View 1 (cartoon, one colour):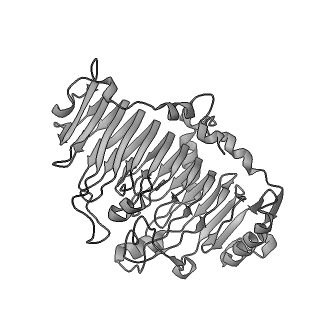
View 2 (spheres, rainbow, N blue to C red):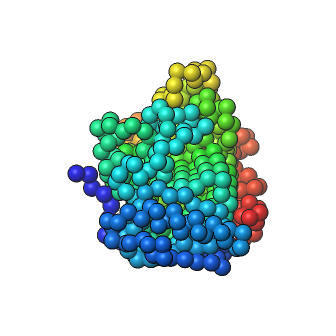
View 3 (spheres, rainbow, N blue to C red):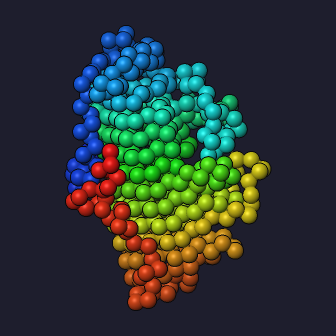
Length: 466
């Protein structure tokens, strides 16, 4: 039987994080949005007949409570309080101007009955379920077309109890694509903070077609062999801030996406202005930060700093393929510490799963202006596997101030890549050997004025716009 994470595991993780100084500091960049937690109206889930024994199904109680609270959406909003207990439920919808608040000893448990997770239409930017043609199971906590939504608490827990879904996936007995733990669509002003997420059936937190999203001070855990249990996947979303998180899952810790092949190209909703700060984590089957492989709507203006990945497969990955189209550009990643990582930097252009046979094999992705700097690493197997596409060279890849202790005799493997480097050890591959200085610093992407303002004392303009 597959092992799932328990609250004991969570306490051990929190103790580990407490020894890393920069993770325990309160964030200064995104916290002003949390003032929206104050709501003039509040009810407890127990007022609607919920029973926190871990056995009673409380889907109706959640649905009825939120239906009642909808009457306050134009009166300053409302808070749904989940007290200590184990609250079993199926999928339920959120509403605008709502705070879902979990007590420190509250655990929301996902039902292991697939009938409690309704089937919904596929995302238009994907054209079908990610795993199977047709629809997909709706996430445990779900919302669409919402404004001002907060999911938070005193480090309460949301546990998807995903092992049954993982087993169905491995046995190939699924009828539809597995559900996420939290998915918000077409929504703006979203805050997810101060919670622990366990054992998602599929991706854990999935903001899609969203804007002005904060994910802050969350712990996300799933067993290392749990399939596709990505941590946080901003998807065709803009102005997303992810800070002060610990993630340990069976796949990518953070994966930035924007649609799949011809459907993503047609939908044309990019992911842009994504900020990631102070992320710790590990996995054995994915990446610390990934872009793609579904990136057909485009990904740009990504800024990630103060990252620590350990005992992991890959640290930083761009995944794409012929037929994806789209672009990945203006990516800036700095201040990265790696320990026991198989591959530090990977560009993989062979991610070939396609939604159907109607994709255009001549739709080539544009990958350009990628800067990675200030990276240190110990016990690294391979420094970089950087593979572009024949006839579609990845341009202006810049590596600066990178020092890795590498165990492989061939630390770099590059093809169809063009760029520059400076102060890189071990010495980089031939296509990147030309020095950044003095002639090519302008060819390397640095922090744009927009993103720089988001990190300084004046905060970001997109946070002010709330």
